[in-house]
Length: 451
Image (cartoon, rainbow, N blue to C red):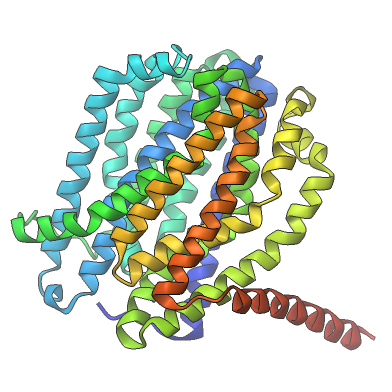
């Protein structure tokens, strides 16, 4: 599979990936504001819904580790140019097997897990959520297939349908009869919206699909052996990002989860550029490693991270000094206890782009095992320091622990990247400075022309 080249590739791919991420966040934020201000009367109910969304988003992100990178990599290999059905079929079989395992865990162990989180109300949601997992099978398969063929616009339309229908349905039901918007019915709305989103993706992916499933044990095992490290990495990184909500639920209550969740949503909005770049950068790094070697990979990493940090730095400073404005817009004054959590968490937000690009870079250069072990260690750091923080400093402790873990994680990843691809922190800082120079130069020229 020949990869697309040139500036137009980056503009087109990043534009639609960024647009997709932005709309996802926008729909999620609007839905969140409606639910938190108009539907859920208590912080605890919002905490239950936040835990459900966190767990099912976690499941989807983890599954992508088994599907996305292996399919993209193997479809790019010359060996499979005339045998792409083997790759597609192996990916679909893996998708079904993983989903079956998750369904079994939810069915038989969901009650215990809900109890551990001090949220028994979660168990009925888990039972209904089984159908969410089933509908995600075609959605995720088609999404990865389209991404492997650089059809980012099609993916955007699929997510636009999925998230947009959910949000519009919530608004319509709120206007018709607010009592209908129970937690169970919100899960059912998710099932419907994901099913319709799958149909949109199917329309765009129909030209790439094979009508039959080709079971090839060798390809299945090869893709699994490659994907197992990416899968493990996604498990550890996703669990690490959700550590504050899981630990605060287990040690304190679902009420505190609601406060940490609103901070997570603000962080997610800030992470849109990082995720968008990571989605596009992985296949580009695969190509760069084959054609140009690690120097090109290093260049991509330093430039992209520097550019993203140049955007996040002023935004982080703004949020730190006026956190109440963002909390008020999203949730209202009853969520003001989340303000100190937000201020603590935002201090080291500029380190997150480094960690997001670290994973795609290590996978692209063919070292997923290193990525696996680094993320395992970082997850342990996250849970360890957050547990200590909550245990000994109170409900703000998870935020303090997250900052300590973020600093140590940054040091570890920088050492690994410097050793493997020669990344220099000084070069990244230069790209931050160059971004500001270019922005001010553009503004100056614009002012000159306007006169």
